Length: 194
Image 1 (cartoon, rainbow, N blue to C red):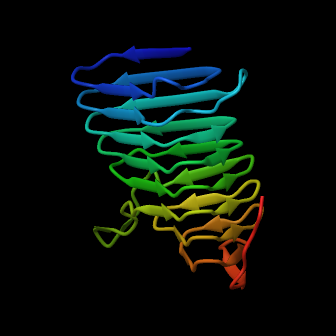
Image 2 (cartoon, rainbow, N blue to C red; image 1 turned 90 degrees about the vertical axis):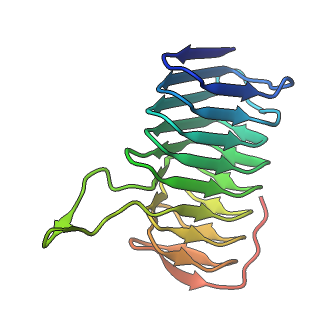
């Protein structure tokens, strides 16, 4: 069942007609937002989606996903696109400024995955901000192991594996294994299978 609370105006919500879902709570507190689940969702009873949209002009597009827990909190001007056929055991995306997150198709995210395209507080050095939001891009067929944190400016290429507890804030080339804090590449030219 979808529980929609819309406290704004001109908001568009689209959920594919053949979705299967356990619990879906959507709160919109702003205007001119788009939240599209434009393919079937494959969500078992007991699973949940929780999206809170505060502010205006946010665009969230989610493809066909197999998931356990997806939580998104955002404010004005957030752009989020999640590709088809990905599985999220526990994914939390949060931002407090205009920013963007793109996740490709056929990804596998374990427990405790956090994605933060902003730092939530401004850091000023000699009168100039040094930590402006930067887009996060995660390619196709990426496996994020338990407890991975993806920060502003991260780019994870197609076919990568990010080890448990890693913190990614830089570029990880395609088909690489990266571990640690900050994440660094330990193996290249890999393939992985679920």
